Length: 244
Image (cartoon, rainbow, N blue to C red; front, side, top):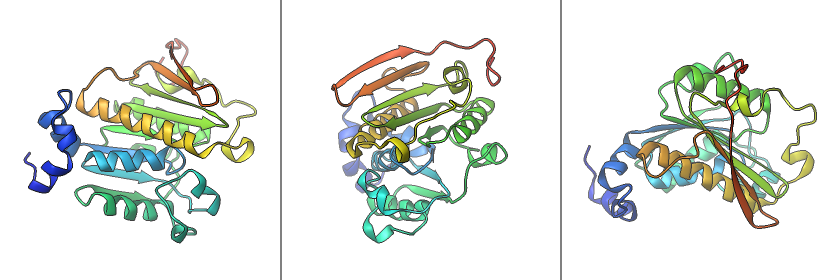
């Protein structure tokens, strides 16, 4: 797979990295990544994956851009309010990097359609804020053998984890919490979305290129108020209904 002169200049800072170089950039160009939820996590993650030169991005979201989204979902502008997120996001990503193919799937991912919505993807980033969707994404990824990068945030803290077969996301969250907190209910500082979304994009890039050590089977927890981060291992649940 060759690069045009434009691509060589565009990705110059990747090409000189020992951990990426030409072979890694070729893997990025050949890859297809799905982003489930173009929200606080998905929007910045999509921007960085497009900028990095991931060959195809599949955006999956049924929602429209709202004015309250603009505080943290930096892929959108005031002119996008009322437009489908996947269409506004596709236009923004194409404007950022015309070499990237953007696929817009403007529908809610469910257990019934998850398999074909994620078909053909090399990595999936899940930034949704409801556990039913997260469980459906996880089950489809385990069944298809696709590594899953999971990002979540609320108030002043966020977390990023990578799940590849076992342990899976259901080992971390066996059941839907009875009083799950959402950004709409408890709030979130806007810049935190950029931190978590960028971390999710970085993990996806590492998985695609083989650079470094991905957070596979681990969860990175970031406390924005304290300015601290810690990493913990996720134990495989022998009774997990998905990977057990």
